[in-house]
Image 1 (tube, rainbow, N blue to C red):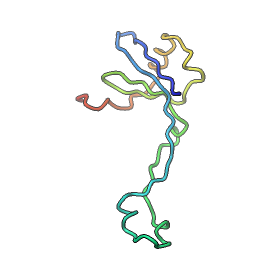
Image 2 (cartoon, rainbow, N blue to C red):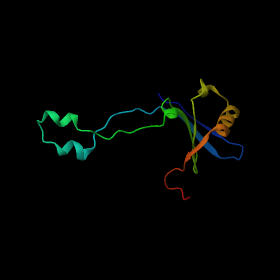
Image 3 (cartoon, rainbow, N blue to C red):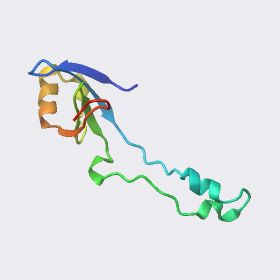
Length: 106
């Protein structure tokens, strides 16, 4: 079960925080899969696109999100789920801006 915590930062904004562990799954692009006729042995040997992640985030990160931004802390601190709100605020201060949530104007 994924742990998600919420806390209030020093400015009074509410944040959610949780762990993220990306999975590197090879996916065939739909167009490439459908290009070869069924029953052809070579179908599985067609070069396919692969998602690549920067090396530093492959081990996972702690994600922070509020209404206005998303932040990322690498690596995931051990036992962060047990930290009090003050410790979570300190981790938030160490995190890097990742993006804005969808629908939030720049």
